Image (cartoon, rainbow, N blue to C red; front, side, top):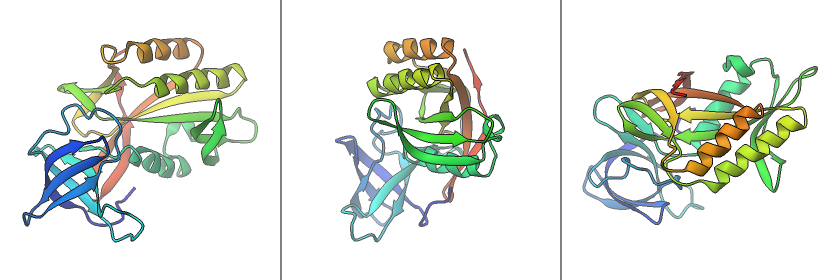
Length: 234
């Protein structure tokens, strides 16, 4: 998935109201950018961080910049836009690049299911049970090399696990797909101390047949692509 317009570097001043971030461009101009991330963004929203913004000239958008990346300064990036994983994964699913799901020929995004929910992707193929795929963006890292989810309490995430479990009960396959939007992590685990309820729901779903996948990403200022499987700690 390539960014629609070339990114521009900036310095983060502050992130506030979850979806807003004041930034300073390289020429000293201060602007407000849209932050497409409802999470806590632990360790990713500190004053003075080098970040990358995507400009736009869409007259329908009030904010003319969107915050896309944190630049860690050592060749590593974190993608902070939670809409990016779905776009990157969709391209890989349609190209058959995810081995665990490559037997499915039809990929349908945003299909209604469960209790007033939409599954990120519904995969189908003649002769196979449908596969329901829910995607989560992983950006938290509190230990070197370890990515964790979630970064804040997520009742919505626990609801998704319950709905995936119900799809398994009905005879379908169901996947929770964790996509690590960091280039500095090689392992994955749940942040059980942050949201014990989600961790408990995860274990119940796994015991009931929900399948779990975790992949990393290749991130640069030109775009984000699906990478390789990430080893879970548990």
